[in-house]
Length: 163
Image (tube, rainbow, N blue to C red; front, side):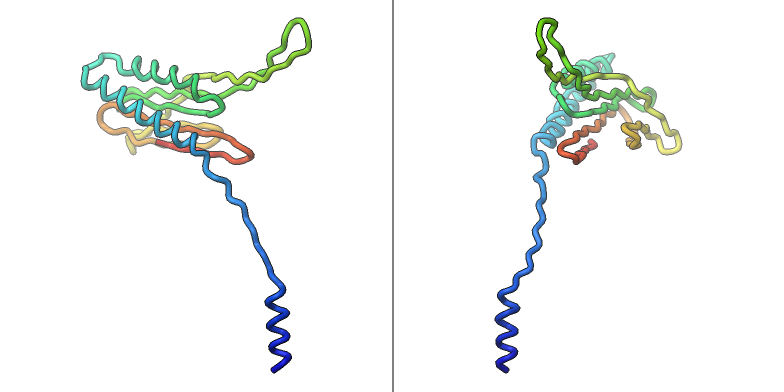
């Protein structure tokens, strides 16, 4: 009996500890995603209600405004209807700026936007885009459609939101 008590005391003195660290989700990243989603829906609603003949112009203007604020995010916008779909991809390019007189170097982030291929899939009435080797497929609904992919690499982790 004494051996059991001594063994119990020794076991209680030895403590095994496992610890893991979980990073917080980048709240600003998901807030930006919500903001883009909200604003684009309002712009498209405005275009439909006002019978804007060129909704793609409204969407293009909005996208160019956001291209400046996405900073170090990569973002793809897909918009259009079941007869014509547009896809644009904005990624950040890090360039080094150098002063002419001196040895000052500065890192500058530039958002570069290009139209990318949007593959129409007639069997499912959807469109597919490819970003960094990953396919994203979006179902086309009647009327105007708007989807986006927002991605960010941070400390070795990649965060992606698709709406």
